[in-house]
Length: 111
Image (tube, rainbow, N blue to C red):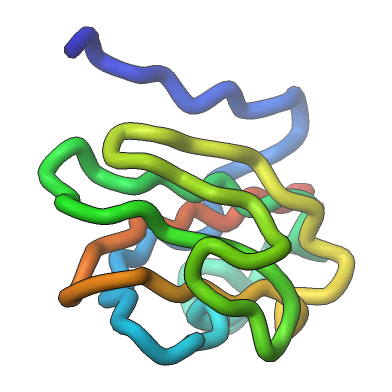
């Protein structure tokens, strides 16, 4: 698989990069902090998420109560998507089996 590039719009920066574990119960995407090195970030603009190629099951993204394979956005191993960040607490992730990984990159506007 070839390397993937995260497109960063002008005046944006990667606020924070995290990896979360996704299990068979829905978990909200992790929050980011706008203190410390992120104090010059005025707001979160987008969330880039990627399911690592090493995952063995699909991850489903959606609102609170999302179910594996239910209504939502499905990410197969190696898949990625950019989500809006207007409500960070909206996005939840769940997997049909085992514990999978999800890379989460918050992007925001720089003051």
